Image (cartoon, rainbow, N blue to C red; front, side, top):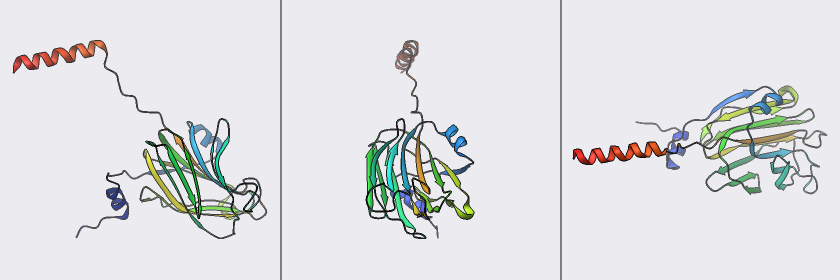
Length: 217
């Protein structure tokens, strides 16, 4: 009997076979800055004022200049992992970031390159786990604070032009404020594919080839 994996089943249901994404480590923020081409958008979870009003805890942001496109407030609970999802379709530009009961959205058109998951905590703790992209288990945990250190960055390639990233996230503020601790999901852009345009000479050769073919028939 043939056994179909969960990843393969998800790919078949979507109507197309998807290649498995690959992951790689990024050692520092300067290394990350060198890898980023141009951020399309960033989904964030951060320490604001840890209350359902005021300084935000969840957001979709963009850079150059830094702009908060959508936001929500949340009161973090130490040790509580909350399910989240981030989906994007480059054909429509629709971004959907769902964290627990909060739904954030935005619209931006761009080609997807790598995705970078970044966790930082010099106070408190932050962790992302159960990460799955397009039905493929990434077998990775991204976390910072305590034994995990102050910074952890995971790169993901092969997301495709339409992706769905799901997982669970936990933030323990432990006195932290102002994005410390915090996590970011940075969606980078990739250059649009270049489709060669035939030259006039090339078009002429194609025409001669077609004429010769007709004469042979």
